[in-house]
Image (cartoon, rainbow, N blue to C red):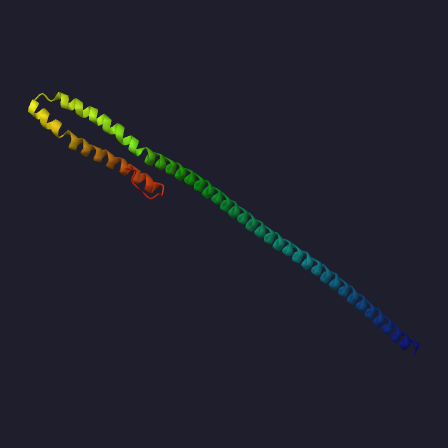
Length: 178
């Protein structure tokens, strides 16, 4: 019977060795699976970290672009404000110059009319002197007063038209200086 017992012992030993090998193989397989799972988890974490980094970078770039756009818009607004302020100052200065010119012209209008009339009277006297026919000369001399008055009104009207235009350009109400 020893040989049966020995066969059993051998079979049992072989079975134990086989079981031990299977247990060891299972352990190694589990360890490899755990290592693979660990590697996969680490790879997934690296990919997540990389995607998060790319997302943060994209967000930062978008924020940077928006900030730059806002800065450029603000700069454009400031430049526009400055341009309008400059144009306003220029327009105000031009308006002031026109007002001063109008007031000066308004105040000197009566004095401007007299030299024009004097010049025309001298011209008219020269033209009368050229007329040789005594009858025609006498007729023209007799009409000189009304003619000079008519010319005075014409010169006065021209001066007033100029003053009216100046008054409207500088937003002043017009009143005649005559």
